[in-house]
Length: 191
Image (cartoon, rainbow, N blue to C red; front, side):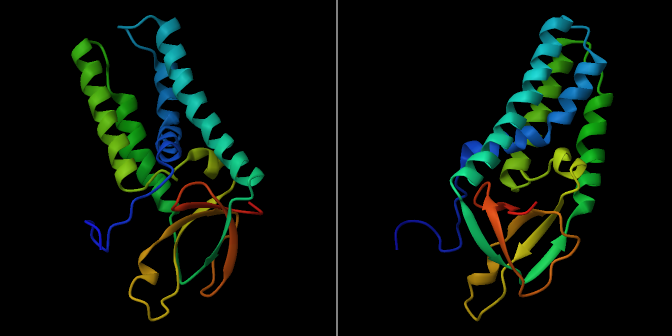
């Protein structure tokens, strides 16, 4: 065995994951653009906020399009599936509202806010929460964490995937075909 632990899994598609994290926090930049800022002129501040909304979401939709064009599909078998609609509420109240209410009236406030935002980006990245996106919710899509069925292999049921789908429930043993957006995030083909 070479150097690493058998339980270590390195998530691929790092650029896609990072852009998905930024797309998940893009509503914050919409709120900031509306609210404005006394430090930075509106043309720069609103322009920067618009860039932080448009670029990551365009990348996300481009990643979906590439996955479809390249037919980058996987078959997922459901062992256990957890519906995570509550994650959207946690996301809204834990991230968006505190940042929106933050008054950025000094350069120090701006620095502290950007540092806090960097921590949030790191946590979303590290905890694989890059599937959180209000656009998915607005389109009627649900997010399930899918654990594969246990087949006696001690490693099989340990890797979970986030499945973005229109379904309201998933049954144990059900097989689904989905496009791979990252190594752990999949979009069901008919979603």
